[in-house]
Length: 357
Image (tube, helix red, strand yellow):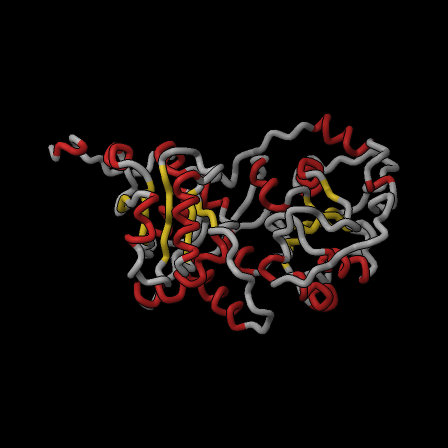
């Protein structure tokens, strides 16, 4: 099953597909908001142009302060983390200014109007995705340049970033915010206007701005295998299950991958409508039910008691499974409610406990 907007490519067979994709799937589902909500890539977003012009004219903004965070912090912590996390920090690097998402859209693909005499006037704006290429293949902002954060110096000299003019307004993004090194590489190369996109790709999508994907599932799988073989530090331990949206889960299932789908909750809710193939396990029965199960299997967990914010019963079930050593745990965003609202198929058990058909 190709990713949205992609050409179909043949696999060597379903066994090969599962062997390649299942181990890799965990790496990107947290980033796959594209799949999670079935976004329309061509939808024209609503942009408050008057608000954009107010942003441009605000004297307190970094573009009127030589594109710097003022006052500049005296101390900066730069913890070393694995490459997969380099675009997933919840806060922007403290020495790099933030570019509001609506202004970034305006400068890159909107009306692009900037008043005469403004620090941005006459300067091109360039978006740079510094995440792993596998994440970029899944989804990215249109017209984005790409270079993994650690390869930026080489990319600026002889790679995909070599033609970026020195007067460009460089806007870097990750799933959220990048590590300081990503922006530092541009500054070291002589770029003065280097910004982080507000909230990264996640905020861009939340605002309804366009995203695209041009990769097939096969191409993505091959890229993940390449990245797995690259030298680097050992992965960080999983501290929370990866989220997966309902559309992403449906795509995975239709693509031939068969995660074990677990509904955690009461029998009446399960009988009133559950995801095809799901089995019901109460939160209190999780440990006993999975005691002898394979710890390497892919498991998707959901419940029907909330909308995925508190994670409810499913969150407690995932904690049990994680403590038992299960490594490939997915948490369905929005739970049963989101699946139902998208019109996806449900299995209804007639008569509930009565056994009627």
